[in-house]
View 1: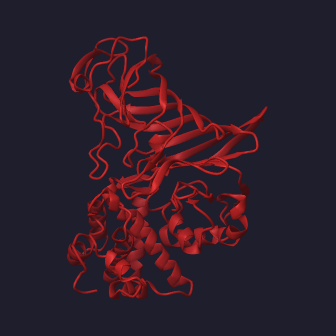
View 2: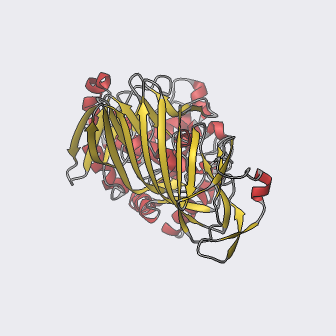
View 3: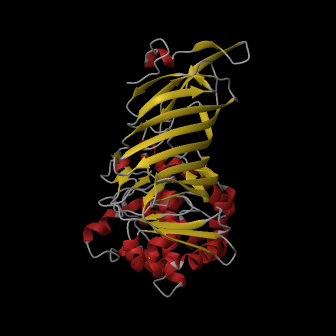
Length: 472
């Protein structure tokens, strides 16, 4: 537990949870309560925090790979959603050196991933306020319930920060839940000769002495779990798509030859995805290819997905499709993961269908018949649980969320026909652009878009039903 030293001992967490009457800035008094530590996510109840909404993160960071030390200043602009006497930020590990709210010193306590902040005066509902946290230390690698690694991952020549589902709290304090999206400025200083790649657009690159500073800006809302930072040696290419969208690609030199051919297809894939899913929701695209040891998964980090080595075309199609479904239309809770992965998996099926491979119907049939996988256990895994109800946090990235989620979309397509189906998937991306959504909102949207069609069996048997449906 840490606290700022110029103040009297901090109240206990129990006391902080009680309603307090504090003098507000500018006179008068505000009766405030502590914001919740967590937003009651069904699988990650400690993730995120109540009582405020973040609008912008300004992160100023410096990293030295030789010592693995990260220093940072996080300026977090947020709006109080009720009268706040205290609020929490998610930050795992790292040592807090100082903390201010509205430019005034504030007290804090630490308990696990919770950094509990008590501002010098209550924050009235609707007030926009800025919290500045100065911190440093050796950022942690976090092991997820499914055994995969995220957070801050060391690489041979630097580091890679990945956040799904709760890894961003390893390298910056924030409201670490997909329901709270914000814009970002990320400035990172590294030893000269290394590159630092993040989300959005590179604004400046300056070298002074033996250090280089990169400044990145993300102007479209972004969930914390798709924020990234890649530090190391990269081959950088800058191109554009046919319609002028910037394409920024950073590739580990050892993966450059193997990656070149497939990454050159990014403009082609983007054109195909815009045709199918509607206007691209962000201001640049691209990819990051970095060797990451045992992490071993691709991730749809916003603007430029991350790959653990040279990707194949299907994986590139999948991660770029997430820019619409997952990054722009973001799940309200981690229970809604199939709205990310089902859509991105179905994008792979559609790509194959349009490029001389199996039709989506053939892929659907192979999964249903158990012939899609060589291993019978993989075929059975598709039916382990319904896509809208993963059994636990350890299973939100299992086969039912991906393949069976895609099968739900194919059943919708069968029901409404191609023309209305593409109206639905494009309309969904447009209606929820840069927002959040859950499964109930999606099913209601589908029903509104196809009046007179009966989706009851699809929702009952394919989306929420246990086991393999009796009929394909």
